[in-house]
Length: 306
Ligand SMILES: [Zn+2]
Image (tube, rainbow, N blue to C red):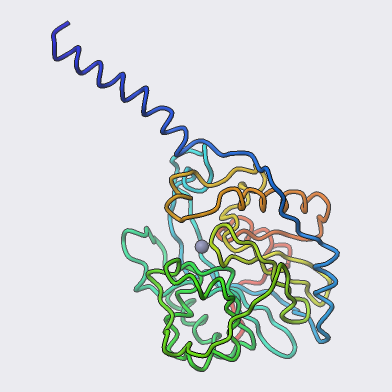
């Protein structure tokens, strides 16, 4: 074997020795949940009934666009196979008002590096038209694909009375980038502050769940007919994370700045809740299959109401 061949072999061996554990750590490994995060179903229901009035009769949604990720980006250890990451906005219809949850982002924000193969301009317009008519505007968290539509609203000042940003969301402008809220219009705005759970409307309760971002919260909805849903935001992008109790890979969570231990504890709590409270359905942030199933079951309805 020549000198250069030997050198090449040593370099390859070194790459293998260093690269294999590094690849395992960054792409394949997910730690086990270790701590505790509790979602108390009895308390959720108590709070859902603490504000008198009529609960939502329908949970409607618009699918505004899709990112395209690889399964390996969604859950550690999954293959490098393309998977859609559909982005939704939700509208809770009540007899006295409409509650909007999450606002996607405008097409202008969908730069090529974000891998957006599908964008429905008409759906985005319907969401924008619904914003000023909402009696309550809630955000599961402060990332661009949830807050971007709000930030780009031409009626932002008009939305302020209905807008319920939390203090943690408002305090994380870096997490919103490239979306940016108009600071001038937010002067004097009082964000929501609460401990772990807060009823915001009849049948609607916020559950603080920091981890994916500091301002993450789950929205519990109890409809007038008693059916229950947890809008998980991006605690989990896909259902499989909760099923298998496996986190996004480290290279993604490091990029996002996510608290993996906190998120894993939330997976555990949601996993446990599915066993103990099977009537409470879980809706991860970007899982088209779950949306299809819950639509077929009549828990969700496609398309906003004008
Ligand atoms: Zn998202």
